[in-house]
Length: 184
Picture 1 (cartoon, helix red, strand yellow):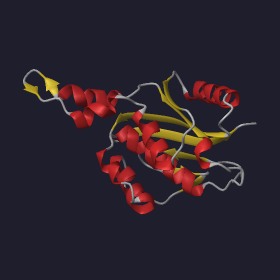
Picture 2 (tube, rainbow, N blue to C red; picture 1 turned 45 degrees about the horizontal axis):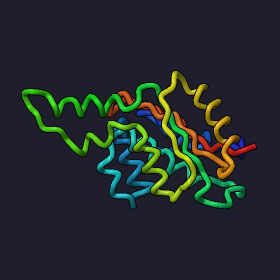
Picture 3 (spheres, one colour; picture 1 turned 135 degrees about the vertical axis):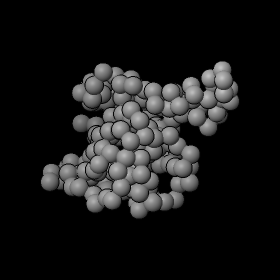
């Protein structure tokens, strides 16, 4: 394993933290709940989150718990830069079901998650980050990496960033790749 590698990959079937597989018994959305109960457990808002937000939240929590850098001097100077190519489509579709003419009941609990940047807000609140946070809708993960490096280098107040590609097509079909990127 590369000592400087600080990343996490989460799929419905597995979790790779810094290149090492975490043992799990669940798959799909139940995997995210299992990870929350085993490794976090102290943020009750988790149970209100949609799948996209849970995915980014759990990924960032596990990655930050495993962080081994001496360079991280000021906790709140870290940026959050996340992206995917479908925004919050899974939750948008769920919300649409609550406003159908034959069953009209708009759900405020679902409405809040029709914004994909809610995940970056939850991570910033949880970790008391005060630097910039962004969620972009981009074509691919490589574009995110280029954007994140350029953004991090141009911001004076941040020394590192959580950079994450978090895609959620359904509650059991998702992918996250989150890493810690340092300013050169």
